Image (tube, one colour):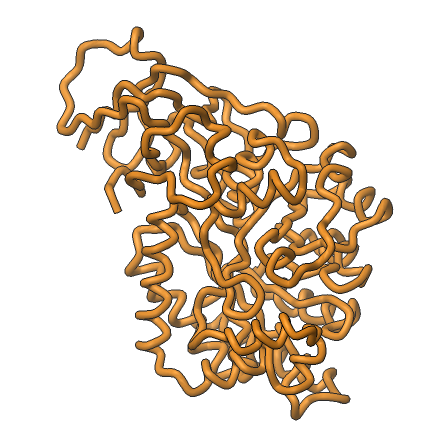
Length: 411
């Protein structure tokens, strides 16, 4: 199957020499081609360039993109989209002034979602999550990392991971799975959380590995959750089964989680509201991608991670949705691009790099997704008529995507 997308107003995020990530000042640079074409052969990008250079050829399908732009699909490297039910009552509690910690102590937060997941059937969790993936694709997302973490028992965590495996098989999107057994501390383990860590190590990790359910392992390493020592124990256990870490770190405080992430060669460390000079210096000498989650910071009205300081120091930055029912109930990556510009003062070029190539790196797929490059998967979206690529973050109240292609097929 050969497809020609022609008369593209502007082809965005093109790479002649593909990179795995974009760092520091380079994040402000975005290569584009105006009045462009794109050729797809089967599921791969075969060729692109200016319309004036397009040679006479035969195609199975031609798509006219006059007045419209083409972007690589977004890579959403941090989500919790397998869940049961919403938590809008807690949303009202937050408006009334209750803190995240206060809601958690009343049995809300992660514990609320865990109870619902434990009671839900695998089929219901799958059907709900598949609908969320379809909606995300309509907004331009082509790759998603999905975490467990709302199980909090071995049985429920494995149920979530099996749902994610079914999503990999059923959805055209690229899906990565992460075991987040240590997302919160069950009430019965309060005051003896080391015993719950034992449970993660002795039961959850081996069972997930035995069934081949997890690509990565994650721990919520932060104040009020799991300590650096807890985290190191679990990461070492995961490493024995080939699970590379992706860490929740420094959302609530300077927890030491960033340093642990770097020590264990984590693919990413995520949240990072509390990031100082020591953490930036540590990240500079690593392969760990700093990943910021603007949706959660917005929804919880938290301080913002020092993104400009990170980039000025030479770091790459990725951004993801953190799609979950409690602190970021949206998987709209177009909105994340807007938040990046408005709340973190990123240029549109930086925001696009953060949500495509760098977020692709943060989930281990930037070698085949995240940019328009020959040989990469033909996963891209065609916009509705828009004036410039800067319009993408500017117009935050509408869906600018007309059609999304995943592996060369319309979804």
